[in-house]
Image (cartoon, rainbow, N blue to C red; front, side, top):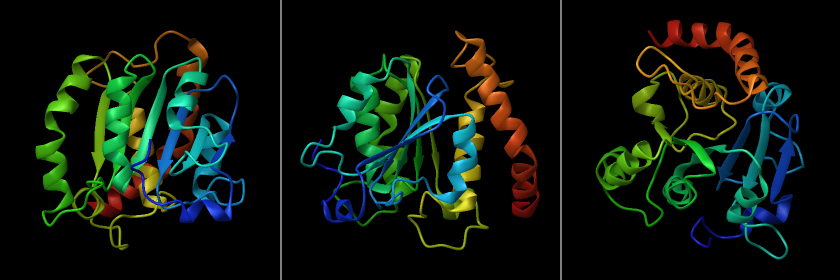
Length: 219
C-alpha cells in the first residue's frame, strides 16, 4: 500500500513493533504519525499488551524489507482488529473490505480522507465511507469511529489526536470491548476460543474504573 503518507517518520525507528502474548486477541494499529519509535509501544498502550497482542505499524509499512500491512494480515492466523488514525482510516476500510476473512473490526480515530479536503472529516466519514461500512457490517466486520472534538469534548488536543493520548486509548478500548457483545448486539465477535473471551474480560476489568471516570468527566 502506498497511500499512507511519506516515509519521513520511518527514519526514527522500526516499521512494526509487536508486544503481547502470542495467543491473545490481535490488535493491529495503523499509525501515520509514527509513534512507537524505539521498539516500544506508547506508555498508555503497554498495560493493554499484558492481555492483547498489539502490532504497531508506523506507516507507510512498505519500505525496504519492511512487511506490508497485507503481509502482516496474511501471516496472522486469527482475525484481527484494526485501529487506524487520521488518514489511515480509509486504507483500513479497504483492507477490511479486501480481507474480510482476516479482519474482525475497524476502529477509526479522527478519520480523515487521504487526499485532504475542505469539509469536516466527520462529514467525509459519514458520507464517503457509508456504503463500504454497511458492506463490511453485512460481512460481519464491525466498524466504529472516534471523533475527538465531537465524541469527547474533554480532549484538548487539536485533531488528529495522537493514538497515545490517554483519552484516545480509553475510547478505543471502550469501542473494542463493545464488539465483544452487548445488549444491542449480544453475539460477540470472538466466540470461538475461551481464552480470547478471557483476555477481553481482563482488559475490561483493568480499564473499567478509568473508563467510568472518563465518562463521568465528559458528563
